[in-house]
Image (cartoon, rainbow, N blue to C red; front, side, top):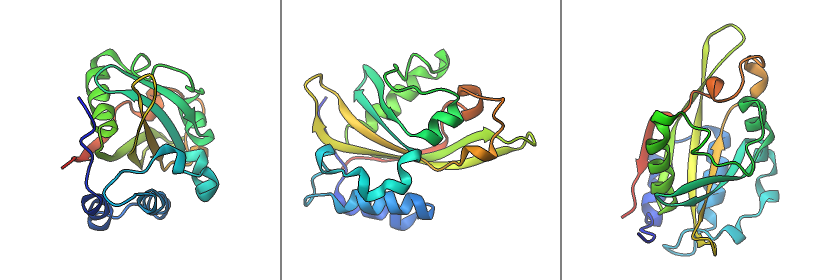
Length: 184
């Protein structure tokens, strides 16, 4: 199945109608600035130095819709929160078996041109659950391996999390309150 991307006006409305945090807004506005008419941004046009302050919160994943999700790059705050660097790893294989189909579907939908947004949870030292936003943004170009890249922003600061509770148990697995701004 090919790219059925979201329209620019719909992408703008996604963030105008439900504004993200200031950092999430910074990334969203930069990503929106890279559009060419109604065409999603190309990965080559994304310049990390333009959002350097957000890089610890960013990951980039290679997604072959309905087949695979591999972590291409993982920011340092995400690594700290997850307890390890998943760069180069099969993101579906490190997901709880019962959550794998849903995670693959969500990433496939975003890779095909939708915007994903949701809430991620982790535990604080006090035992309290801490939440933060996650934004999943597609790029339009497809690699030789049939993969589209998805940019993911996770707005946490790991220093508030319990460093003894790491890995997927700490990050809550699938996003809670996930919503998709669908393509056309």
